[in-house]
Image (tube, rainbow, N blue to C red):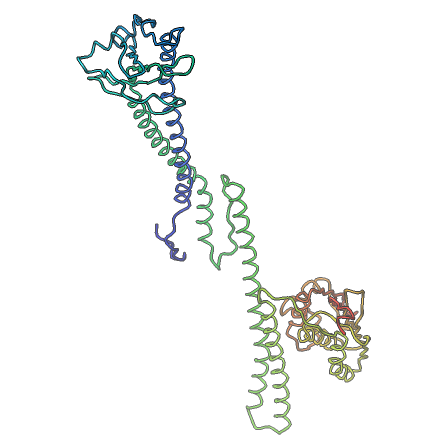
Length: 490
């Protein structure tokens, strides 16, 4: 079946049903073939053993009677008049018996041998004595006219172990060779039938097992970027693993939907935040160009343009930093930074801005607080927190503190008496481009990227960000970072 237009072409791969049939079918072929071979070999050995046992029992009976008390060969002592030595008919199960002396000369033979044509039945030994322990070996056979016989040759020994003669005993072949062939054909045919049935069963079972997967696949093919809200219905006949797969796909769809929604919001917010300063800038430039103006008016326009361009540069820099942080996977920072020194190096710029607005700016930091982190990234944290504190504080005080909590943690605390945030606003404070309503009311330029930059940088360093705020009462932001031991810092 051709792939749907939105489905990428796949290499020429075998289906799961085909692979299951091939692998499981091959294993079954080998297992059943071995089983059939063992059955055939067992039957072959058993039939041969049974046939040998009959000849062996009769031969032992002969040997027990043809050795006299003096150890000499006495062939006439055996009961030659038993029916199976007299007649040739199959109904009496004839035994064709011959006794030879030590020189290999025929001493006596059973009368049923005379029923064959002259010289048809051999009057000499046809083979060496049958080795002992060959009850499972193939039968020794000979063809006499239209009768197939199997035979056994046994030496006659006296009490001293001297060979005084030989017994050659033959019996009608019960058709073991044909029986073995029929058994082989029967096992082969049965194996073929069983494998065909098992193959069909495997194919049917595989289809039932795959039906829920096919349903899930068909449902997945209908999902597009515009329909990420669609969820896969777990079929009732699905097994646990298939249900887990469907549930995992639904979880993945939820993550994709969230990511797409965030991307859409991010794109819309970025476009809006970029458009606003550009629109303002264009408006001032248009107003300025409508008629000739004084030099001071042009300077004011250029100052405004510079401020807006700086705002745009800061926003683009923030977006680039976010893109860098969002790259996956990000290695953990292995550099060292002095948190106290970073605060002291960045504070003067913000202290001057605070002094122009009559804000008290206080720094409490020890001489050195080494932490594990990338200095430039932590500088972003410090500058963004100080910038927010200064921008959104109209009056009062800003305090920056660097503290050592224990041997493993250092803290950066930035407190202000600014406009503050509600609890709902605090929950969204680290979202990209989010600005609280109270911050909009201050008419202060901002992109809403400050805390959204701080939060991932802190998390990337293995730290935590905590915000405490209340409207009109100010905000306290606390950053905890892994601390380096003093020895390491030195």
